[in-house]
Length: 529
Image 1 (cartoon, rainbow, N blue to C red):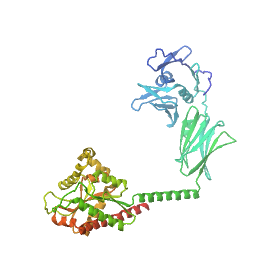
Image 2: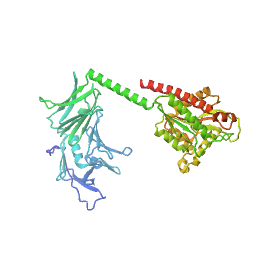
Image 3: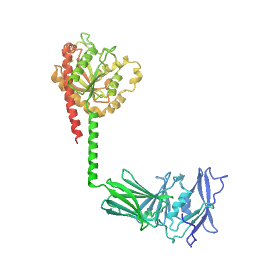
Image 4: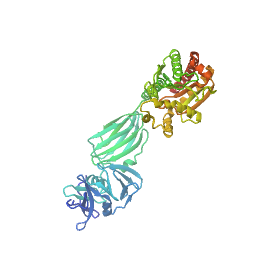
């Protein structure tokens, strides 16, 4: 900070007296008395916040007759000193200083933020005086004992330690030259991996406006200057090929040199090779993570839940278990490296929510729930298989089938609380949560439907959608297969027979095999992109 200078004709003397707090205007308000001449003085208000004195910027600007303005919309205050515009923001320690003729800006940081009360703005007194010292051409000093602030003449020359920055290209990089008027003591340089180079110089004052006009080129992309009361920080944005920064003291001058070494062609090639290798390893890792290596087979109903009953009293739970076990054997025998997980392998009752929970815990990549269809009126002519996706039902038939399959929740203890949020509106949100798997679910459903039609005598009734609770929560592609109608005498006989169950299981196996080949081919091609 500058010492007290002799006063010239345009100098001013400010005498600040902090009044006692025994009867303040408000709980934390204090007053400063500013003596503008040997005989005249005015008061300027301030704040005492936890022992830190703040000065009112609005009143200071009025006393010094600085052009000023308050922006209530963005909560900012600014005033102008000569050709410099200083902008203060509420609850922000950073001041923006703009050189009006060039529109070049720099940033200054206070240790405490600027405060606002009503339309008045307050800055911490002591650091603000230090900042003011740099803005006032003639310099400012403050006697901390008498709290006397003195402003030198505009005619006095400003004092800077750092006057500019220049850049030179070298054979192995670049040289940043920080031009200085004296030797510096403590200097720190830190090059971060993200390409920001921080150069901190203790006890230095920089001509921020001269620095803002630095001609940047090559590997040096940007320069920001942060002036604080105790140091200057020059922050450079450098190119990715800058590998090292080294501080060099120039013995023949006061200049500070920062040598930037850039990567050589062989180094760049090695780094790029390593980067490409890392990309391939990550792609392979992701490909393996999504590989169709765990298939979950869910035999519908079971235990105390018999499911639908056929014309001849055939129980749905027996058909679904028979098909599930046969499908599992086909997969285990023919798809090497694929793990088969069953939600049940015996006549056991498994809650609907627990079925997808089992699938998720096993890391399933495909969930197939097996069921049989039926109508209340028996016998009926309705026949054929259907494959369902988890979405709100569009047809009355689909809604009725879903309601019948979902009714099993009444056999679960505490089902009212568990499923009470699955209203029609919330069900849409639940299905949206599985949007990441919808494309694959649809793809598998189409392939499986074609395989079922080709490899069995059952009629293909198509791919449909309905709100089956058993599919809720599956973090993988998932479908529900209604294998045939137990209310149809002919299909009941087919579904009940071992040969019929084998035909259905083999058809589903062929669909899974074809889907796996197409799915993993797409993954493999994606890993090479």
